[in-house]
Image 1 (spheres, rainbow, N blue to C red):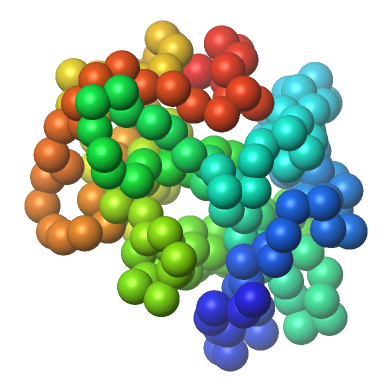
Image 2: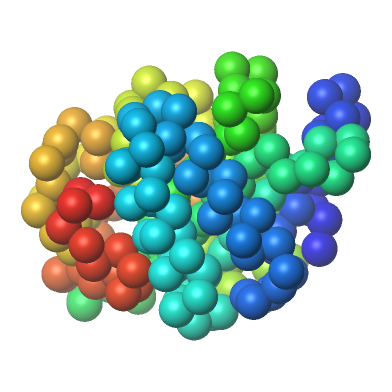
Length: 198
């Protein structure tokens, strides 16, 4: 399913149709290359293994993956959103983790556009299960470009202890303004239950 196409940059943004499709290895390889360049080969291998587990072990209803492909169809970006549950809150919550852009095309706005298009799709009324809240854990300056704001751990309890609480960010997809606190303890999908990711 293609939700949006960026004609100016020649990049197509689409949601990955279903789990287990043939592009799975391409996505894993993309994350390995991007994180190897940023943080070295050990971290690249670690993130690649995490992405493999996320794609292969997460139930389809709990995972949304969006990709960016160039005019030749080559994969140049990917972002994953997986379900989080808050024990006393009925809202549909997903966490954005991870995301990557191919090293050769970084710093061209592809990552920002990919996330923006994915968020539009997630909040869309045409979606079978619209997402109401998205959380992420990363660079506030980067994710702030698409509307994420810093949140206190009291506002949305993380499922594991945070090594960098300043990177805990949230976004309501149902309206402007601050995120109303999510009630209760949280759980995430199995692949994210790795303390080294937090």
